[in-house]
Length: 172
Image (cartoon, rainbow, N blue to C red; front, side):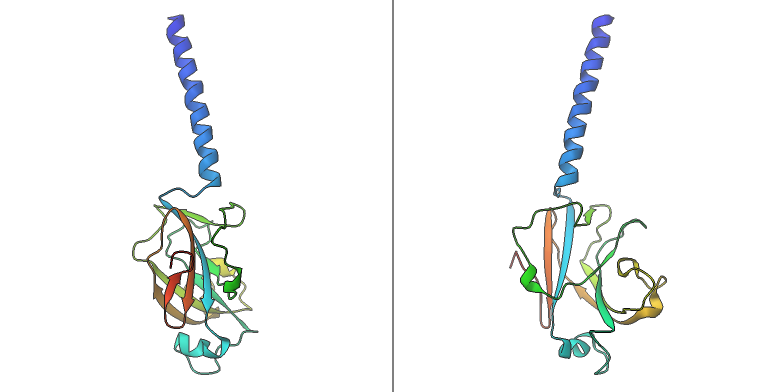
């Protein structure tokens, strides 16, 4: 009986160590069923109204920001949107995953189809840009545009939205 309990205790310790190694690896890396998004917009300010299909003079870079509603169904505490970066010169295809800088979404949070919504949002919104939707901060939405892109899993998706196309900068 003593040998049996010793074997069980050793197996429990080995299982615990394996679990800790996996959890550390998962925390610091992107697994094959997860995705990270970085959205960039390569459209000139003067073409923004046409891009969103709104009346000329609607978009004002000093009064508005552009947010992308990601193809995710994330929990309430996790951002489902991000402010779009306008500087594609900052893209680094060698960028490593950093849990403090990136939001990682797993298979249960990712939606099929790659449907994303670009939103022109009023800067004066009291709701954080990462949490805006129709119900929460909807009054500060100036314009929206639906776009589609097949994102990859197990990687950081550097998605560039240009005037005439959408592409992953690092996987052209």
